[in-house]
Length: 133
Image 1: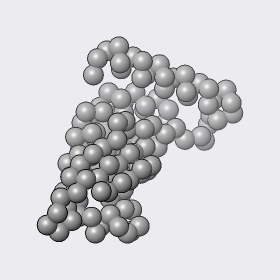
Image 2: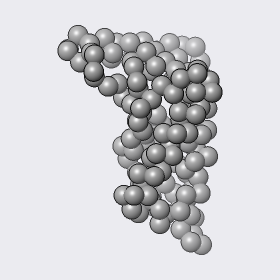
Image 3: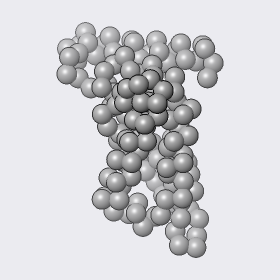
Image 4: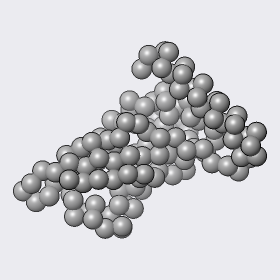
């Protein structure tokens, strides 16, 4: 990731966090960061290969952790591609299956962050879009 892009991302997060704090959103307000672009992977449907597009947002434990998400985006994205690739479509059809996958995504991202910064940095992962076709 280029230094300019990383700087722009960090400036955006600082501006967003500042606006939240000045609007009374500081303190207990959570900060959500989108992992863009969406992930597109192959999934299994018996003998047929299908595609899944999935968008994620993570809930940070504190606003200043946003820079860590941007800094370690390649490692986080790699972990997500490895997790999502080859999932069974039958699992993705149920709310329970989606919840399990979301919990696995949380643990995988926390592991990447723990290994790189010594802190899990996030409380939750949310699927904001999930399409299988």
